[in-house]
Length: 245
Image 1: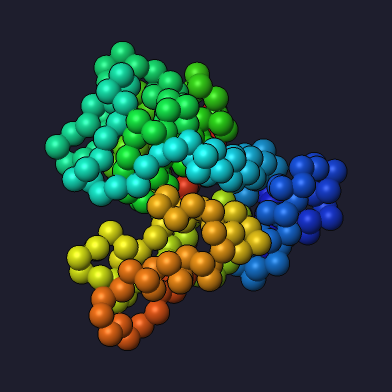
Image 2 (image 1 turned 135 degrees about the vertical axis):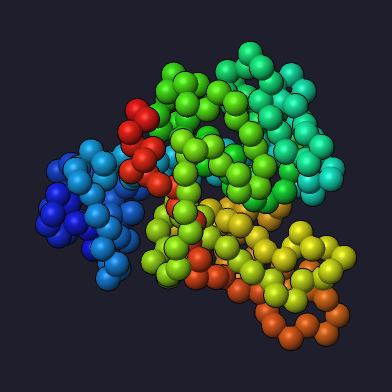
């Protein structure tokens, strides 16, 4: 359910304000769940819808970029824009606009390699750039650092438990019996694209069955448990990012 300025609203109540088909699909999803999503204003709701749509756009763009999958030990980045640190993370070079550094990953993806959590972080930073624009992005993300779940304070994310999966959410497939020789396949972090489609760095855009089958092929000998989609949902704090515009 959607609570807007203190009252529950239905999708039809927003039909004149929300005309984009992708955003309408998100509204329908929200309204179908018993969970209440609270918004203080229509502008705040519209911002989240735009960010979610841009997350899908960013995931699809990154999937086509040529970004390679590897572990932190073997990660690499375009040295023109990023310093690769000893821990495998990427720190933006002094004097480089953050928007240019992030956009280069899309333009020259073959010059980059990292693991799946950092891939998801890149998706969310691209979505932030698409949503707030380069001027605000360059203001708030000057010393951008890309590694795992280490987000800038101006792009806060949080984890919640539930099955109210919404287009643009980050979800997680767990592989309990992963092969200890390939520990990077203990899980796969994905962006939910809707209609049982997910983007994960390392697996591409696939449905849930395909991802589970893939992870099941990365298990130890004589496994007991199948890979599965977790109840954990990861979301940006849209209300905080809304204030950066």
